Length: 351
Image (tube, rainbow, N blue to C red; front, side, top):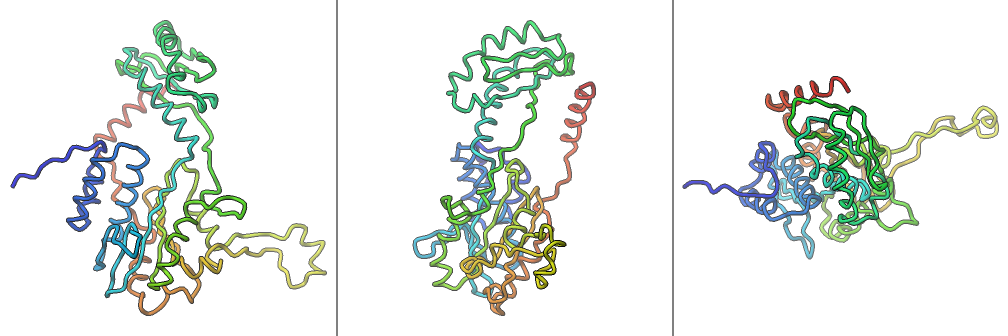
């Protein structure tokens, strides 16, 4: 029977297809349906994050299930090895709301000008004043933008601020393209430390919410619980941030030489124990699986009374540890992508 092609708002690349193919058949069709139906970009990214971890967990002999009901909850993934269940909940650590908004504005402006028939590179810089404006207000100076581009298409380094919303700069003229190419001006990533670090005075972050959400089930069923974190490159976070927060932080006693005679048992360098040693986390969080720039890293709770270290779950622990320092997919760059990059580099030579 001829296989029906599925139209979707999400570009299902060969990598995504390969990931889906590694899942049980009933889960494969579910992910195709999800990608077909979803239109929100952030929700699509979250679905793809679930897919990534499902692909990792589907390796080996374990029986994997997606959103299998446990009491009133549906964990993203459950794994069964020798009839022993474990829970894996996925969290995509994405960019801040501010950076999301700025990217949307970049895309909006870029879409308006990139089809114009001028062989130039235009750098777009967005001002913070845009963040409080509506789409209509941001688009209001576009007629002036079109006139300015027409009049300055041959003026290298011409720059113009439009109503203090955004600025355009022509950074290259006479490119090999017959339309405008856009690049985004440099900016500092708006990192939000509270997305990882939970403090008493702030409301629960998403990590804390996920730990609390499954606390009763973890306790009742006595199952291992893993948090799976997919780090977006532009979130400003890296694996090392998680390692430091959950394991320990290095610290140094300031002005130690002046005080060490009075504090003989305190060394100059010492460590602050991390979140794994918090009583609730120690009991409930078996570890983390982290995807950071296509590389998989694992953090296993080091407390020996954590159930992941029991004989019952030795096969699960072996499978999780085997994932450490592996890659999600083969990152070999296709030939057509190499050619595209070479073309762009050629255009950028005289920047």
